[in-house]
Amino acid sequence: MKLHIRLLCAAMGLGSLAVAQADTLAKVRDSGRITLAYRESSVPFSYLENGKPIGMTVEISQAVAEAVKKALNKPDLKVMWQAVTSQNRIPLLANGTIDLECGSTTNNTVRAKEVGFAINHFYTGTRLLVKKSSGIRDYADLKGKTVAITTGTTNLQVLRKANAEQNWGLNIVMAKDHADGFLLVENDRAAAFGMDDILLYGLIANAKNPQDFQVVAQPLQVEPYACMLRKDDPQFKQLVDGVIGDMMKSGAFARLYDRWFMQPIPPKGAALGLAMSEQLQRNLQELSDKPAF
Image 1 (cartoon, one colour):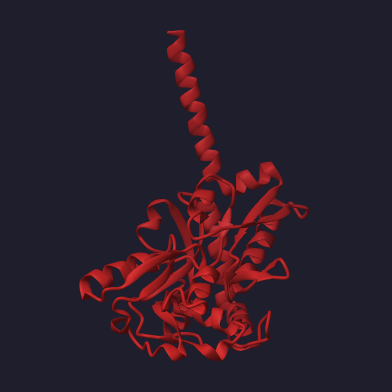
Image 2 (image 1 turned 60 degrees about the horizontal axis):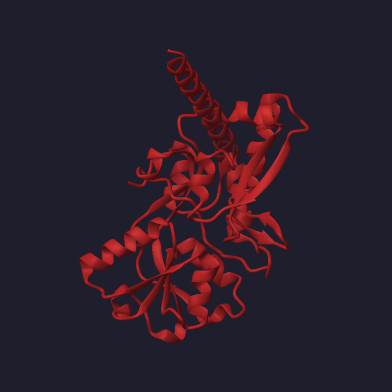
């Protein structure tokens, strides 16, 4: 009987811990800090400049942190930053290492089984980064050639599926991150790098010789990006959605977009020059968190 009681109490304790872990605001209040995730090479959303995280979604994360300070009445709340990759971003969120990830993460139904998503803040699709001198213009031109794709991304799933269905004959290799994928093409170890088109444009803009590269092929699909938070945490989702929704309704988001997509950005002062898509313009009114698939 005593053993049964001890096991029951232990189970109840673990259950309470899980609930507390899912309550981000309570976790942040009790710890006195919030940990925000950043990516090292997701230009212009979240990347490093002189060792410091910068980018459009870094600014969104900062706005969320300020809202948390006000909601908890903790102006001295510590704001911590943690680098994440495509592979570890979901595990680090689930285990409580990070509290929010705003970068270049696709909001889809598969991931929604493990995590929650805020309002979509961008729409993109899988395309190819190649050297202009390669002569590659479409997926069919890559038959028998090597294509790099970042590990842990939806692009890997999409391109693998299309490769099998279309019999393109691609040799797919894994890149540890987006910068590594670009390097494989730059050093001629891969003929192409398959990734979200906006990230490819960002990599080219910050390359040593941007004139040597281009983005080709039609998008294989359209995917929304959204900030990622722990699943079943309605209170924190309401706060994050409130911050992003207010930015979209007030015009602050449009100004943020202009700064990071239309104006010169670090480190080379190059402008991406990508106007806001129709899907994103529509979502400034709809404030949808609808997943891709």
